[in-house]
Image (cartoon, rainbow, N blue to C red; front, side):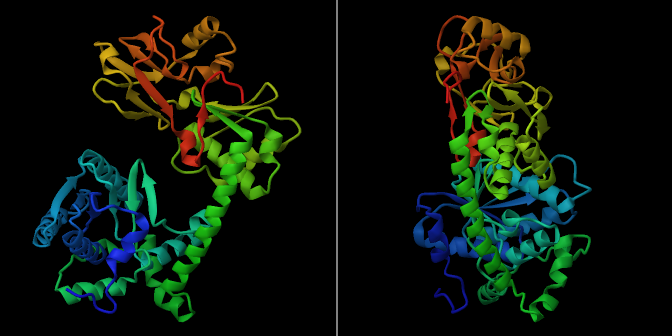
Length: 440
């Protein structure tokens, strides 16, 4: 069917994402008009390209009608020639911050499913209207440049690539597409529930548009701010690369004078990135906490600080930032579970399956006693940080016995560690970590 003048050119919308025709994709489909329009467009593109497309619907357990709605979406997907899967949340139903909690549940379930099914990217149906509402909501919360940049068209969430091909498309165009194709959709009653801030903001749209604040103009503003965000992120990355050294053991060292001797915005971003990399946080710490830490680092005398599960202490001629022991994740089994992400910061995988101990294995923090023993055994040149920092190094245990410390290349028997542990915290800031014991 030829595209009508206002029908989105989906192939052109997909081009910036660089997907090959062999990349399998999933479409998040609630059954609402936006997601159904995305499914229609994705199904059309798949027929032309031969791409594998899967529709995924999440039943959060929030509404009695959700199961029936998922079955209806499955029927519509089948009619479009698309395989469909319903993912059901089995845990507690959120009762506070319902939309945010539901979003976390949704992405968690879809991320697991996509990883298990080798999905290259998950498509979600956010539109130009959604982008405009997001900008207004974040403006009301006093967000800075990053928040006011709106939603990114291409992002990664817990290892899941999420793309938004309709982010520049008005919702009206999608409704016209559905009408033209005779495609029904579901009206979600939560979209009219004024307990939700987004619904209340949407009700203000006619008044705002009368003053020139149209969805298109707001989305364009978010786009301009995203350019500024990317420039600031690049400057921050270069600054961190020049003055901060990350170690694969999970800590960072820096000269505080060099770190803070930059424009305030870059200083704040740099401190925030360090906290996220060492603390494993998904979101940056609150601005006023970050500013307080930056001020303390810039003071004539620095006596230490803590933020986001990260301790900052004077060390040698600089500052050492490392994970607080009380904030570390509990040990977890690695038996048959490799690769895995531990403590939100370390990717654990098996280097040589033939060498893996046949007993039960777990990944956990080294702990102070073993850290002190290893310093005595390996020497301070190799393990040159305080015991409090070294105790947070990830180590593999077999039935309570220290089996190996992969980041140190250590095994009690002198052999080569059978696991690989990568410190991925710095990667979120586009940086790498050096081996322990190698001076910067």
